[in-house]
Image 1: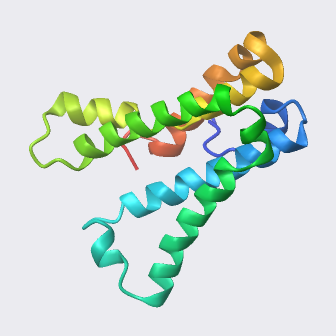
Image 2: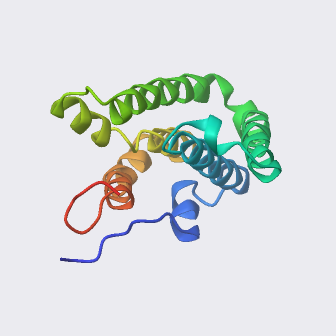
Length: 161
């Protein structure tokens, strides 16, 4: 099996944002925030049993605080009209995946669909690429983003992590 990239690194962020510092900072904050949210959702029994200690509660509050920072970031506020809709579409699609990923009665196709859409947050990267470099720039990164999402969520045998 050939080597596939399964993590976003600084070089990729620089390329995605065409070296624009505010775009790079926003993307990194967005990326970290959505992963914090996913970590909370992925707790097997839900948030309740997870939030038992002072440290757990601190992590939960930190996730909400990160959201405030992301959605008031200068890059986001400058391009809010362009970024708000993708952000809401991402949240909507993510909510769909969570329902079917965790549903005990979900059909096989629903589980497959949820797995397929696990990387939906990458659409923010595409939106940022469009803002920073236009259609051709976004297209030049799109397949690499799909590959990154796939290999960050699947093992070498293609099974979900």
